[in-house]
Length: 119
Image (tube, rainbow, N blue to C red):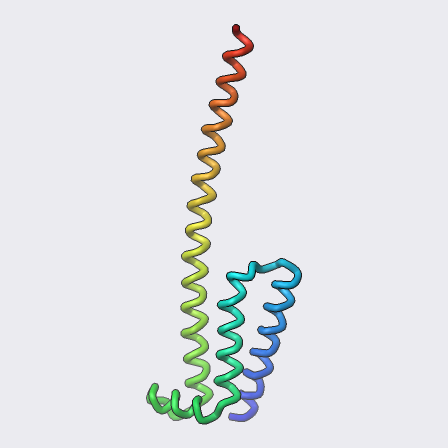
């Protein structure tokens, strides 16, 4: 059990560092990095506080606290992936609308240019 918790602690530390480096290099926007930082911090806190982890395992009806940790983290990441899917879907819709507006503006601009050359 201790090896698994230590591995999860290292994993959460690596995730924290990876997100911070990505923000510093502008690979990820700050508003999106907050979710990842909170998830990594939750993983770090749960992997280091045995009492809290055992209480969570008891509440979930699990006999193994690390299994409870993996279940909580899995659910947390599932929620994050859903949130980012919603954001990506909205951005895609906005991108399509923007492309359509640009096409309409180019059409009007071309119409104006054609009208001036015939006059």
